[in-house]
Every structure is written in structure tokens, then in C-alpha cells.
Image 1 (tube, rainbow, N blue to C red):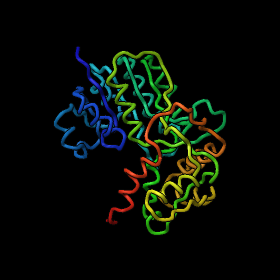
Image 2: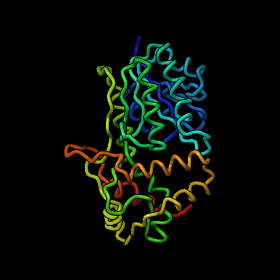
Image 3: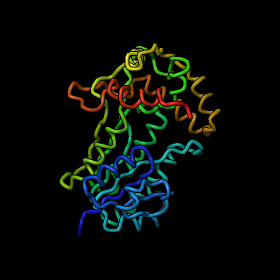
Image 4: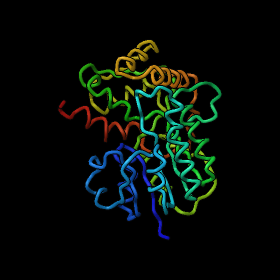
Amino acid sequence: MGAMIVITTPTGTIGAAVAESLRAGGAPLRLIARDPSRLPDTLRGHADVVVGSHADPAVLNTALTGATALFVLVPPNLTAPDVTEHYLSFARPVADAVRAHGVPRVVAVSSLGRGFAGPAGLLSAAWAMDEVLESSGAAYRSLQPPFFMENLLHQVELIREQGMFTLPADPDAPLAAVATADVARTAAGLLADPTWSGQEDVPVREPVDHTPREMAQIISETLRQPVAYHQATLIDYRARYASSGASPAIVDGMVEMAEAQTAGVYPPASVTGVGTTFRQWCGSVLAAAVTRPPV
């Protein structure tokens, strides 16, 4: 039996990058997509496509037949009535299908900070997913990113027009961060490698943590214009998500996550860290987004 790598969320930022990387390397792919029309032509023409959701056991039964590796990412749902149950509604059927089909290796996107004792909102939900996927018995790698640098792209207009960005984080406390490209690259490397076994956590992060104030300085230097950091109160943060249509459970989960970040949920970076630096990301991603004319 030849290799067959199954990718969930292939139209999302990370899932698409994982799939494109593996396609470029010649790996046989099967994609689980709710809306195949959103797939780029390069993928649609070079992969099996199973239409549907990876929360659906019937879809998984089709997709995992003959699979040798599986990439799992739980798609966000701002209206979910329960944060942990949202994650587990994907994890449980995936674990059952992995067990039934004997899929040897599973790679999933979780979160840095696993083992944190307190409540951590969306992070706690991701760690609950890890436990369920590990129970499948497959060799498992839990990819563990911290704060996504790409979250700042939601504030491009604020950066461009008002010279500021805002988070609930302490301006002078280091905030671990990662470029989504590094998460995708790590996932693709593991999925293409048939030699690993066991179950391990894999932190994915930039080499050096910066404080939000330092991030503002780096953004200012990259854009050649002053950009300041403003610490949002948790009340403001809660109101922002509530006004965007998020469910009460998601709002609570976001606030809990922010509180956990303040409480040190992310361990400090090691001196051996690799990956895209925040300065590199600002130069290649943020600067292009800020200078792009508004649509």
C-alpha cells in the first residue's frame, strides 16, 4: 500500500500551506473540504477530495481508508455554544476513525503551555483535544504554537490609520509568538516522514520572545513610521468579541486565554529556538498588508 496523507482544513491558512508543501514534494494527498470550490487549482487537480466535515464519521470513514498520516486542525467557530465541546466534536470522531482504520501517524495543531494548571479557555480546549487524539493509539505529534503573529493582520487598518495596535497583554511582559508558516512547515515535515513513533508535544515558536512594547518598536522600524502599543482592558477585549457576534462561551474562552497568557501559560523561549523572527515576519507579511491599498 502506498502512502496517503489526509489533510483537514485545506482551505484555511495553515491547512492550505501544509497541503501545498506536501503537493510540491510529490506526496499523494486526500483533502477533506466542506467547500471544494475554495481549493486552489493546484490542489484540486492533484489530490483526492472528500467533501464534508472532519466532524462527520461517514466523511472520515471515506477519507481515512488507506491513510498513512493525518493532519488535524479544528476550525474556529465564533458562535460555538461550548468551547471544549467544539474541539471534542472533531476530536472524538477523528480518534474513532483513526483507531478503526489503523492510521499510523497523526499530527494536530494544539497550543503551547500544555500542563498549565489554571483555566485557559481556548487553550484548555486544545489540550483536551490532544488527550482524545492520543487515546486513538496512533503515533501523535501535538504541534504547540503560542500567539499567532497573523492575529495582528486583523489590526492592519488600526496600524495604518492610527499608528497603534492593541492586545490585553502586559506591555513589558514577553509574549511568545509564531508565524503560521512555521506551523505549516513543521506539520508538513512530520507528515512526509514515515519513521517517527510515540506521542510527543512539539513547541513551534519564534526564537526570541518580545514584549508588546518591543513588538511596537520592531513594527515602527519595519514600516518606518511610529506605531505604539495600547494595552486593552479585559472589559474592552470582552466587548470587542461580543460585538463581533461571538457566543458568550467563545467570549469567555478568549478572555480566559488572555488571562492565562498574562499568568505565564507560555514557557520562556529556549536559546536553541528556530523559526521566523517577528522582525522577519513584519518585513515579509505585515509590511505588505499595511501598504496594500484598502479594498
